[in-house]
Image (cartoon, rainbow, N blue to C red; front, top):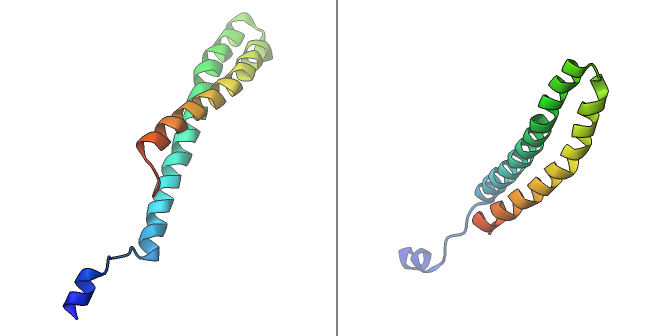
Amino acid sequence: MSQISAMTPKKESDSSLMLRAWSHYSRITSRVFLVIALSIGILCGPAYLLDRFFGTWPLITGIAFVFSLPLSQYLVVRSMQEFVKNNPQD
């Protein structure tokens, strides 16, 4: 009996596969959220302060937000290309 089990390859259980999949997808989700939040925060934070200083409240922040959206999408694509290359899903 032990010879048969030694010759057959061990398969991962369904729960182990599910745990690996959730780990992989949670890392992707957290990376995408972080890239979007940081790109918007880095552009809109100083823009908000400039708006307060010059008294033009929605103008500079709105322009920064409009530019931060395509920038965040570009950064997400680059980040995901790097992530997939370094962490392939079996």
